[in-house]
Structures are given as structure tokens and as C-alpha cells.
Amino acid sequence: MKNPQKIRVDENLAYFIGVLQSDGCLYLFFDKKKNWKSIRLSLYVAQKSLPMSRKFKNMFREKFGRDVNIRKVPNKNLYAIQTSINSLYHIFSEWNEYKIPFEIKQDRKLFGAYLAGLIDGDGHIKIKKHQNDRALPQGLIKIASDRPLGILRALIRSHAGCSVHFDYDRNSNGVCTCFYITKKSIPFIMRCVYPHLAMQYKMEALKEFSERKTEPARI
Image (cartoon, rainbow, N blue to C red; front, side, top):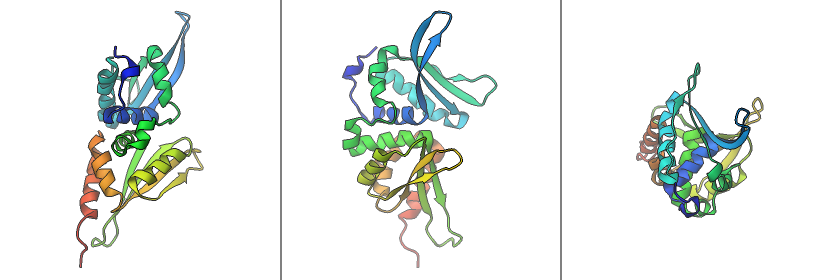
């Protein structure tokens, strides 16, 4: 196994951290039979999110030299990755609770890859088409979480150059970090975020929107 202390934060690892923080979970597991505690990582996804799960699995092997399996959850339309990370916890704990490494905060490309992981995991790309077919559509990206992510909001503003707001769900107590896809933010999104996405339908939505948004004005 590779030494986690020597792992460099590159774009692949930045994406991995984004997926971990959006769809992953770290928890303490107690095995009653063995009377033994272990720290586990779990990642549960629906079938449509398997491309993201496979990318996460491949990066686990690449970065940590460990093979993990994707298994079907019995009687549910869910797929899971589960593994113990006792020997890796000292590094994974630095990414828990939406903590963003300094390198990712400072680097535009690293942040774009991290944002792609969040969007693949808990993101929703909403393209609103106008009733008037001649009008260009509007695009909105929403990233769901269980709390307001103030640092994420500030970083999106800084790197994408667009306004960001929180959308609170009174029914679930959740909150979405929302930002519009504009002519100002499209270059960052398409150059730094889009290349790292694993979810095909999200890639297609962004690509189609980008092509429409950059069309010349209609007369």
C-alpha cells in the first residue's frame, strides 16, 4: 500500500475527495463476534450513479493501492463500496465534514475537479428552457448538503466568478448551494469541471447548455 503521507493532491484525488464528501460516509463499526472496532468507509449509489462509483473505485486503487468491490445491495436498487480504513484514517479524517485541503482551495484546476466530484455525487444540473424557442435557456447547478457550506460558496464565487446562494428545504432541513451558469462562469465550468465528470447525463446537459449559451445573439 502506498504511504498516504506521500500522496500528492492532484486532479484525480480532488475529484475523489468531492465524491467522498457528497456520497461517502466514514463511521465506526463494532464487530461483536470479533470484539473489534474498525473505521469504515461506505459509498452507496443508485444504478444511474455506477459510472461515478467505478471512477471512485479506480482512484482508490490508484491512490491507495487497494482494490475495493462494488456490490449490489440485496433487495434494493443500490450498489455499495464498503471497506475498512483504519490505516488510512489519519489522512481521510482531514477530508471529513466537508473539509477542503488548502491545495484545492488555492488551485483553480484542482477546485474544478473537486467540484465535479460534488456535482457527480449530490449535484443537480437544471436547464430551464423558455417558452420562446428563440430565447437562450438558463442553467443552474445545485449541490445538496445537510448544512450551509460557506467555504464552498466563497470558493465558487472566487473561481467561477458568479453569484452563489443557498436554497433551504424546510421539509428535509437540507440546503443546496446554487449557482447559475453564465457567460462569465462557463469557461471555468467547461475547462475545469466538465472534463472530470463521470455522469454522462450531467455531461450532456452541460455541453448542450454551453453550446446554446455561447451561440451568437439571434435577430
